[in-house]
Length: 330
Ligand SMILES: NC(=O)c1ccc[n+]([C@@H]2O[C@H](COP(=O)([O-])OP(=O)(O)OC[C@H]3O[C@@H](n4cnc5c(N)ncnc54)[C@H](OP(=O)(O)O)[C@@H]3O)[C@@H](O)[C@H]2O)c1
Image 1 (cartoon, rainbow, N blue to C red):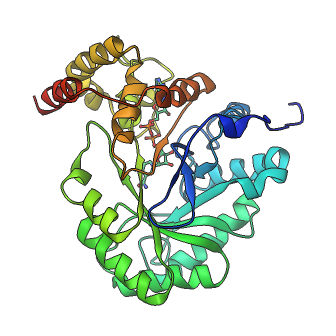
Image 2 (cartoon, rainbow, N blue to C red):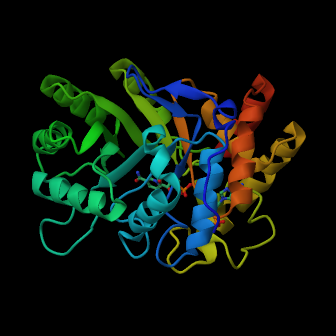
Image 3 (cartoon, helix red, strand yellow):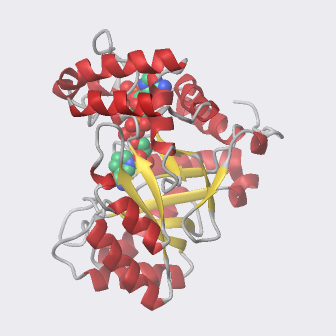
C-alpha cells in the first residue's frame, strides 16, 4: 500500500466536544476496533478504515486487550498500522484500551485486581508498540474485588505514566459515583464512562446520564447501532458477510429476527428525514449534550462514511421523537 499522508483538511470535517470537565475533547464519532481488526479479518481493510477515519477527523480509537479474535490481535494489527501509517500522528490521537474480561488462564487474567490490570496494560502496550495509552479503562465492575483496589490500580497506572487518563466501562450510576469519588481522593480524576447506549438499550437514561453530568465526567456510547441492527442491512435477511452471520460475531440471528419489525418502522422515519437509519440512530444519541462521543464500529469504509454523515443533521422535531419512542416502547 502507498505511503500514508494524512488529509490536510481533516480538522475541518468534524466537531470535538469536551469530555466532562476535563481538558480533553473527543470527536462526535469515535472508532472502535472490537470487530473487523482481528487476526480473522482482512488486514488491509482495517487499515483503509483507519486511514479514512483519521483523514476525516476521527482522533479517538478504542481497543481492549481481548479484541480480535484471537484476543490481542486487534491491538497487534493496530500497532502495525500505527508504525506504518500513523507514526507521525501519534500526538493527534486518543488511543484507549481496557482490561476486565477474560484474557489469560488462571486467577490473574480476568476481572479487576491490581495484578491483572497492571500486567494486562503492560501486554497491551507491547502489542501496540506504545509507551502509554491515552485512556485506560476498567472494562466492567468486579463484584469480588474491592473497588478501592481496582481504583488504586488505575491511579498507579497513571502515576507510572502508562496511561494519561482513566476510564470505567459498564459501571452503573451507583458504581460510577463510587469510582469517581475514590479516584478524586487519589488525585487521578475519572475521565469517562463507556456504556452501551442505543435506541434499543436505554438503561443509562434512568440515572447514569445525570450522575455523569453531576460528577463532571464524559460518557461515550458503545454499540450505538446495536451491532448493526439499527441500520438497513438486515431489512431483507441476513447478508453472508454481516456480523450476525459470522461464527465469532456477538450478534445472533434471533436478535435480528426479534428486532426486525421495529427496525422497519424506524427505517421509515429515517427515510422521511432524508437520512439512513444508521445516521438517525447516531444523531438520536448525540441529541443529548451529556453524550461526549458515539463509538461506532465499521466493517468497511463505506459504512464509516455513512455513519460520519450523521453529523450533517442532528436535530429532531418533538413529533419525530415521540414517534420513535412509540416504536421503541411498543
Ligand atoms: N466497553 C464495552 O464493554 C464494549 C462492548 C462492545 C463494544 N465496545 C466498543 O464499541 C465499539 C463499537 O461497538 P459495535 O461494533 O458493536 O458498534 P455498532 O456501531 O453498534 O456496530 C458496528 C457494526 O454494525 C455494522 N454497521 C456499521 N455501520 C453500518 C452502516 N452504516 N450500515 C450497515 N451496517 C453498519 C457493521 O457490522 P457488519 O460486520 O455486519 O457489517 C459494524 O461492524 C467497539 O468496537 C468497541 O470499541 C465496548
